[in-house]
Amino acid sequence: HGSLLGWRDERRRWLKAGWRGLCRLLAKDVIVHAASDSEAGASEGHRVRVIPHGVAGEQLPFPSASGPLRLVAYGRLDVVKGFDLLLRACQRLACDYQLTVAGDGPDADRLHVLARELGVAVRFVGWQDRPEQVMREAELVVVPSHRESFGMVVAEALACGRPVVASRQTPWRELAQRDCGWWVDNTPAALAMAITAANERRDQLEEMGARGHAWMGEQAWSRSVDEMLATYREALG
Figure 1 (cartoon, rainbow, N blue to C red):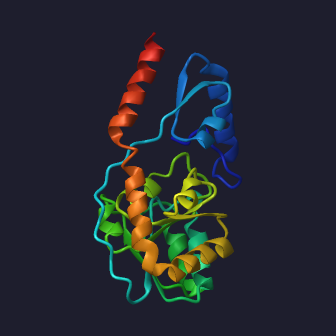
Figure 2 (figure 1 turned 180 degrees about the vertical axis):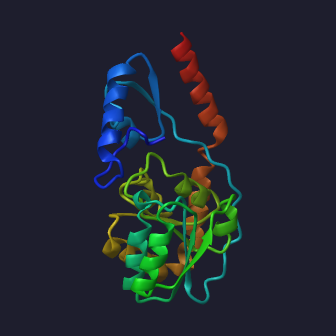
């Protein structure tokens, strides 16, 4: 679940680097489950099986394209998730928008302060147990993470029928290829350009979300379970 991945500004960087090195040294006779190719690349020295997480979600009714563009960011409020980049991106936007951030974590207070300093209007709603609670009114979900082994928020948003802007540090290149979102650098400028592009295609966002929902229909939990069971049988054998 990302413990073998690192990134430039992670907390306890050297401790985590030591942990990763210890895993490579001692855990030779194991099979590592990676949720994406990028996570598999960080598991060098192990036998690796890439099995994406399953996802289940109901395609929610899409909100009407009136008023400000409704943006949602959802997840643990930690520096690695890049929510500060989203706030800085919103400062650059020329279009009307409404931003909702759902989640809790160690970076929450800093994000509240940063939003006030930047003059960015944002609604912090705390942790939500079910993604549908925050996706229902969203037109676009933004995932600006510095590093993700999978990025369950992306899968959950697509399963709910919402297009996504995700950073290139997430393993979701196919968002652009399948025309159900944008896969961009996690910089304020690139995120702002993607949100602006989404606003210009606002009348197409529902169709993009429907394509994403159909895509996630291919990633059912039953498929992931079957592949995991096969991996356990391989390990036992």
